[in-house]
Image (cartoon, rainbow over all chains, first blue to last red; front, side):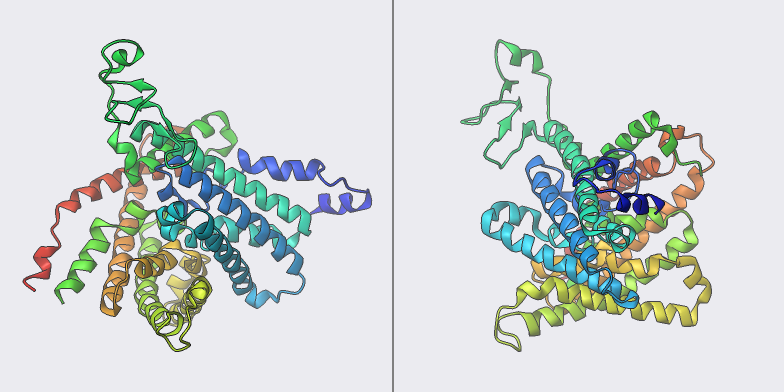
Amino acid sequence: MAEVKNVEEVKEPLFGKVEKKLMTDPLNDNNPITVQVLGICSALAVTSLVYPSVVMSIAVIFVCGFSSLFTSLLRNAIPKAVRMIVQLVIIATLVTLVEMALKYFNYPVYKQLSVYIGLIITNCIVMGRLEAFAMANKPWRSFVDGIGNGVGYGAILIAVGVVREIFGKGTLFAGSPIEMKLIGANAGKVEYMINTAAESGLGSWFGWYANNNLMVLPAAAMFIIGIMIWIQRSYNTKLVDVS
Amino acid sequence: MGEFINIFIKSAFIENMVLAYFLGMCSYLAVSKSVNTAFGLGLAVIFVLGVTMPINWLINEYLLSETGLFGQDLTFLRFILFIAVIASMVQLVEMVVEKFSPALYSALGIFLPLITVNCAILGGSLFMVSREYNLSNSIAFGLGGGFGWFLAIIAIAAIREKIRYSDVPPALRGLGMAFILTGLMGIAFMSLMGIDPAVFAGPK
């Protein structure tokens, strides 16, 4: 809190040290998923492919940033007793906008994400940032904090998505315009970069390769995040849980 | 009746909220440190899900749909109305628990109001809409989903109580282990896919 007071004296740059810290902190030391354990709820189910995870991340970044901004603008007008409801209404409105936009621009992905877009409302990370940060800070700073947390969240989602899609399906960005088929047996018109059914060349070295069906199951996302937490905490020992 | 049991079994075991759809993970991970609090929260979730689901069904059917009271397609209001119903039901549960079981109330602490943002509750209502359940189906889905969530949180809490005495690598202690255990439980629950719900449904 003292920090905030000091900054007000000097003319602050639009994107100074504080903003940079707010933006980068959620990427590692204060990651919403692996450290704060918020927001795992809704979105992991979409990580079996990368493309929906990217769309989901963008949606969360948008909602997280703008709900922080609006809550922060209204923070002095919101009575303490009903603040939860006001926050929920702000979030729900933004999510409704996202849902409509997605339905209009990209219907197949909208179908694929089904209820999970609506579940951004109850994504604890959005609500958590509003309660912990936006209710006590200025609009611009809250906006940066919201975006930062959204990005930290999206980074994990996409990382999980990449691992699951490459090992589970042998493709990357399936369903999007830049679809890449990495490894697998050619069948009909479907051609992979590494054709495991080939007689000669690189592909013939991978004749033993088969997609790991475990990665398609929801359980795989759990294992991958567990292992990510393991790796992160091995390097960053101050995060280790002592209990 | 057969269909009721059918959906109950399906939502509780085969398509478990936590293990198959990752719904309600936040409170699932945060409150599963002891079996007692997990039990209390599990019961609260069953109740809230069982109550909000039919209410939201009625709202969706009679207020928001084109054949409803206003004769207009108001489905864009769905999120806001659903979350309002859930928030007020949670408030009600909170008052009831505070009155009849102060011990449980203090044990649950902050997590009781947080049921509002428990994705399982809103997720259940949204699934109900997208799967086009009718009223009795949605009651079965609410109770079954809540029961599945209850089972999952009790199981993980019991395992976490035991694993405290095991020699887990320091970096994996706590959260990391909880994730991996949840994954293993998910695989274990998949063996229940063999249950044929049609057996309970009986001849039509």
